[in-house]
Image 1 (cartoon, rainbow, N blue to C red):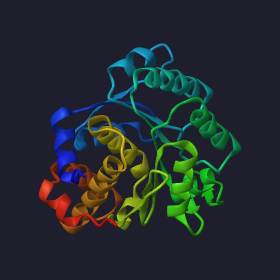
Image 2: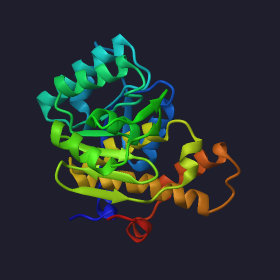
Image 3: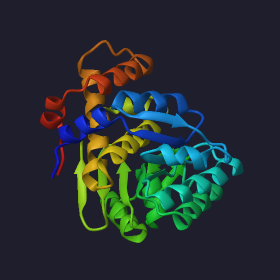
Length: 264
């Protein structure tokens, strides 16, 4: 098993191109977080552009945070091209369960494409797994009692690696369940940290391949960086935390990730 530091080094050396069709509320933050993590972001969602852009990418991130029919069409076009070329797809089913349109769109993408990684919050993953869960707007209110089992069920059902993120994160391939407990409560004070995580997952999967370990590494890097950002001090509120978070991801050392990771 490769360590998180091994994969972090590979991402930084290879600088994978991550093609995003994503949430316009957080698109700039996602691009910058991708850069800080060692990747190279491209944000292209025109149906006429995405087939050629996907050809250049190491991974494709589909985020349904700000849905409209035009971008859904582009997601399907880009996803089919990615499948044809063997390029991994990461789906962030933002707000699934809040509206029928979001839930239907997520399942349309899952059924139409080979999705390699599904990354959502506890509520979203529980809804997709069929175990309930409540989602208000794009935020999770609850995710049922067995989040790890929800991730496992959804992974078994879809064939994707599934990550359910929250106070404790769970990653499953349908057989095993990995539990992660790094992270700062300050992550919840900034809009879009979940979207930013999908960009980091895109970089790690793009550079290191699709596996539980690469998804665990991506989650751990962002969560450990959030702890470092707070522990270094001079965080006065959401604005200063966000700036420190970018810096912490960019400057995170290999020694720190292997020393601080909490995984079981």
